[in-house]
Image 1 (cartoon, rainbow, N blue to C red):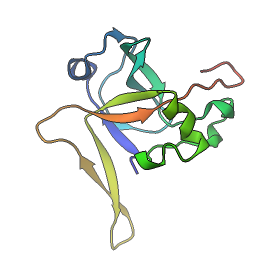
Image 2: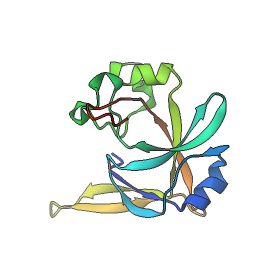
Image 3: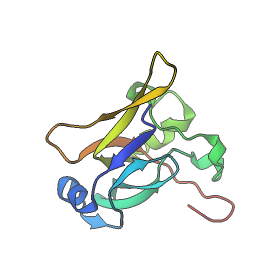
Length: 142
């Protein structure tokens, strides 16, 4: 599972992904964790826009309740199977996230998790596909 990733510099991400509208502001980070606000590019009224979104899918029906799930990774073959993903997938709520790389862990014979950094050779940024949903918590946070 992609539990942590590396965020590239904003300028590098903008050159690679070329969003038409830019509503984001971020800097490079080497340990992006779930529930953080992260940059994403999505289509809005036929134009690409760069926005900040919270990483981890909290479905609209959860009314902002974070315990309803922080789904971080799933196989594309399961997008239409469950109610959590079906709505955003069929409604075209798709996005791409700029990555410089991500970490994956392997359990060592000694019983501890060894991190490995995965990236694309010769590229300072690449994009990962995502889906998004809109939810509002009791305090009005979207």
